[in-house]
Image 1 (cartoon, rainbow, N blue to C red):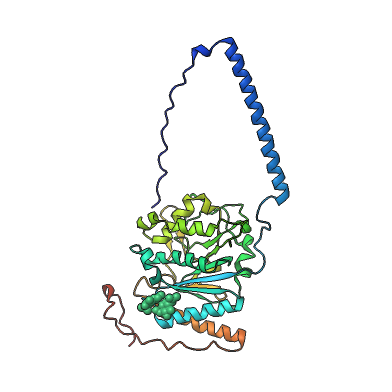
Image 2: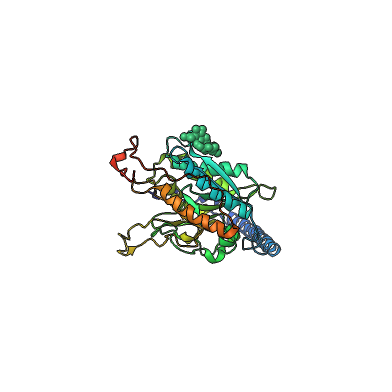
Length: 374
Ligand SMILES: *[C@@H]1O[C@H](CO)[C@@H](O)[C@H](O)[C@H]1NC(C)=O
Ligand SMILES: *[C@@H]1O[C@H](CO)[C@@H](O)[C@H](O)[C@H]1NC(C)=O
């Protein structure tokens, strides 16, 4: 999956040839003088640079970012990309209602998009790549916002009263997983052990097999004369590189991201990993599997529990065995009760009852659609 290091250029410098004509006493003396002069100039230059560096440290307190923690309320945008060809109106309505409510509670904003809008950019790669141009689109539309939460359309916010600032951003120092393999289970590349939250630009978690990129937080640097560079733009452009899209990674943009964080220190240096359940709990139980390398049995430890911020229905579309909408409605009902507890009234009800299941003629994919309750 990942490339080996490119071969280094072999260099065979030509053997040094000594010019015999110079080998006289006077020319040797002149060479000595030139050498001493050069050392003197180098010495002065070094002293000057050291002094300048020390001075700049003294003036800025050791780093350029000011405080080490991410403090105070932030301008946050939640980015959602619907696959409106396959998702039902009811399903999208549930997701929107949930996110609109969450945004209203905490003063955030929502950016909704459909995969179809980015088809021309992404084709012929898998449409799941759409999340990247959608994020870029959101960064353009909300250029002065400071954090962008990219959250899969198959996820649902289950704890509406918890803000991203109090849950993730402010306590980041205590949440960050330091010096662990950046890609599970055993990448030789580890996360930094000395990264300041104020220098963090990407907050992610891992599931058992991969970087869990279905929920992550990207920091934006609003443009000013002091901050003309925007790391978020760089990161998204690097991730969306045509070479990666053409490479046909098995898990498309997910594997491209894993390649990126392992091979580009500029990305690793801005990345913080936190526990999966903090922003991306799953709701299905994958059977424990044996690690081929260590022989240890690994289990998912990221199942959704009462009080978690998010439940992610990841994988609900991958086989005919699960039904995203059924699962979503289960959490929607729980969430309505929680909203009622918080506000004293239920959210307005616009979602119809579950549609009765019929055997779908047009989607008989390998005969897996179950002839369920009629
Ligand atoms: C999906 O959304 C796009 C606009 O974003 C629209 O043009 C298209 O008709 C929609 N497709 C369906 C099946 O509703
Ligand atoms: C996405 O598609 C849905 C239905 O297909 C449509 O109602 C909605 O306006 C579209 N959203 C955007 C941002 O185009």
